[in-house]
Amino acid sequence: MRDSSEKQWKVWRDAAAREDIDAAIRALYADIDAAVAQRAPLCNASGRCCKFESYGHRLYVTALEIAWFLSRVRFAEPQVVSTRGQSISLQQLVQSPSQDACPYQIDGLCSMHLIRPLGCRVYFCEQGTEGWQQDTTERFLDRLKQLHAEHDLPYAYMEWRHGLAEAQSVLHHSI
Image (cartoon, rainbow, N blue to C red; front, top):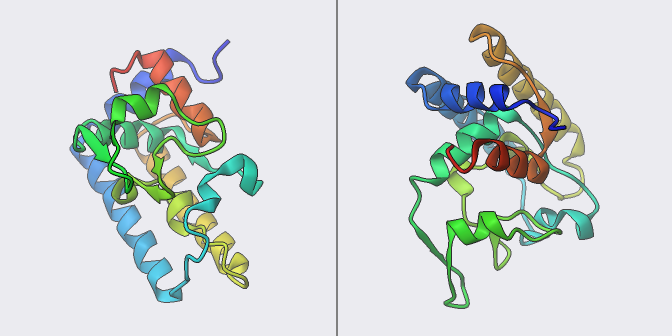
């Protein structure tokens, strides 16, 4: 049995396609980016945090974030070229994700940096950043919950890779 029903995924997919939801998510992400920029954290790990298993953590997102992300992936360039000159299609990334890392990480870099979810925007492994990261995450997660409530959307919070796989399976790549 799926964790989230096919009907819910279709509701999230349809909501993600709406201009008002798109604008709200973009505004939320811009506010997150501004809040993080005020802290000026450093990323010294070069994408190691995106290798979830070996780094020892998980990325959790809302289902609406997944639906919004996937609806934007299809507008991205059809090919991603790695730093090794290897051409990888986005379809290949989604169909054969690494069990360890985010399927959108290529050569240690995020290939979807502009549309990454809240958790990716806030997390930094720099020592001393844990407190403000947690506060920032909670504040903006509350705004995401509020967005769901204002638009009468079901709310679900799930692990990134599992949610991506479920959404794509349920919706048959129609997001």
